[in-house]
Every structure is written in C-alpha cells, then in structure tokens.
Amino acid sequence: MQAPGGRAGAPRVSIILPVYNAEPWLDECLKSVLQQDFEGSMELSVFNDASKDKSMTIIEKWKVKLEDSGIFVVIGGHDSPSPRGVGYSKNQAIAQSSGSYLCFLDSDDVMMPQRVRLQLEAAAQHPTSIIGCQVRRDPPNSTERYTRWINQLAPDQLLTQVFTSNGPTVVMPTWFCSRAWFSHVGSFDEGGQGVPEDLLFFYDHLRKGGGVVRVDQCLLLYRYLPSAATHSVLESTIWTHRVHFLEERALPRWAAFTIWNAGRQGRRLYRSLTARAQRKVVAFCDVDENKIRKGFYCHEDSQERPKPRIPILHFRAARPPFVICVKLDLTGGAFEDNLRSLHLQEGQDFLHFS
Image (cartoon, rainbow, N blue to C red; front, side):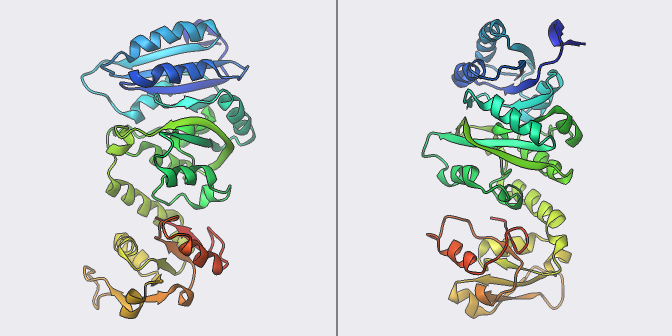
C-alpha cells in the first residue's frame, strides 16, 4: 500500500493543520511539530485556505526541515479570492492525509513535545472518544474563567457540562481521535464564517455515543486572538444550537424541571423552548427576594390562553431536576455553596446551561 507521495505504509498519526493568513505564528507552530517526542510514524497535512500573506513560503521552508527529520508533509489548498472556511479546510486536510489517528492543530497554537505521544496513548485506550488536554492560554490573563473551566472539569463533567455556553468540554485545538471514529461521526460543517463547526461536530459525536477524555497535562499553548474565526459566530446562533441540543438530549428524561434563575437568562431559556418543553417547566427558582416576592413569571408572548404563569420560588423550596442558568464563578462562591447544600447529582438532578 502506497501512502500519498509514494511512501510505503500509512503513518500512525496525521497532524491536521488548516492555514489562513497565519504568517505571524507559523514558525512557532511548525517548530512544535518538529519537536514532538513521539517515535512512531507521523505526517503533517496542511491545507491553505486562500492565504494572502507569506504563509505558503513559511510552510515550504518547514517542509524541508520536517521531511529531513522523517515527518512527511502533505500540502493542499486553493488560491480563490476568498477563503472557504475552517470546516472546509479541516475536511480537506483530513481527506488528503492517511494516518490512523488525527491530531488537530490550529496554526496560531503551539504543541508541547509530548502531545502526540500522550494523546495517542489515550486514544488507543478510548477508540470512540475525542481526546483533549489541558492548555496554557496566551496572553496568560485572557479568558481566565474559561481557561479554568477547560482545565479543571472533572471527568464526569466532560459529559454533563456539554450544554453550557463554553462549547465543547474539550476545546477543538486539543482534539485527537482515530480516523475510523471521525469517519463514523461524519465531517465538519462547511458553511463557513458564522458556523460553529466544532460545536456541531461535537454534538454529532455525542449523538453517536462518543466519549470525551482529557489528558490532564498541559499539552498546548492556546492563543487568544480577537481576530480568530470563532468570534465570527453569533451568540444567538450558538444559543439556538444549545437549546435544541438540550431539548433533544436532556429534557426527554425529565417529566418536569425547574429553571434556576428567574432573571434575564432563565426567562430567555424558557421563551426559547418549544411549547412542549415549556409545559415541563414547573417553576423558576432564585435567591433574589424581589423576584420571589413577585410570585410568578407571566409569558406575555405566549399564544396559549390563559397565558402561562410560572411560579418563582426560593431555591430551597424548588424541586429538582434543575436547568441552571447561573454563570459559575461570578457570585463569589455563593451560588456554588447553595447548590452543594442541596446534595444533588450533576447530570441526574441538575445540568448547567449558562
């Protein structure tokens, strides 16, 4: 069997690298590929999505260095007037690669030397899982709450916190999985700018029964760039996908539930639900005495008559299960203390949505 470029045999791992105008970061990114301590066969699959800078010049320079060290490099791309998007680029990079395992890498990030080796070990033990890792954010003080969430989720929370606004519980630039499992799930959405292709793939992965595993070592320098493609996705788009996934995966298990937060986010969730799911909401709960004193929330825009009036209770008077619309780490620990005092089981008695 001949792999691309006339090699004998397919590599064990393909590093999947979509590139679009990545000139400022590519040297450091590609150096981190060269410095991997993995001793098996490895290739780098680059797809250039119509870059207009010197990205291709840098890639061609590193192709020589990488191949001299035994890492085969496959380069594809197009030079259309405009890029086709991250989902398309990743799909193309995967299609032109041949490794048994896929290691995803963003062109502005940097891998630690042990990344491929440690994630491959985990993937071999969990063949139907997406493998992630802990990260170090750059700049260090950017997205501190989000970075803490990425790194500190407990193993069971990798599956129970999939409905939150933070997105996939292992972030896309850390993903590692088998090619066979990726093919089973499908491919990335190619809708382009404004489409959360990683979140959509993650949901499909979970629908197929896939697992989520994190290597608890920092294996990636994960840059925060205001210009990153992820910032082109509207919050309302993410919200709609999250609500649909919540209704599909979690709410059918519950005959009734309480929304924890009688404020703006809780009411927004209620209004976003289908009429069938709205009828399962037996109460809102809160700690705000003013909201509780009001006694109920009336859904004025409802087509039902009489209009639904949902009770607002103190959280201690409310019945689980709860869909929690309170952002973590923002109440000085008061919310977390209140939740712990109820001795509930995450995933069974409550789910985080915010």
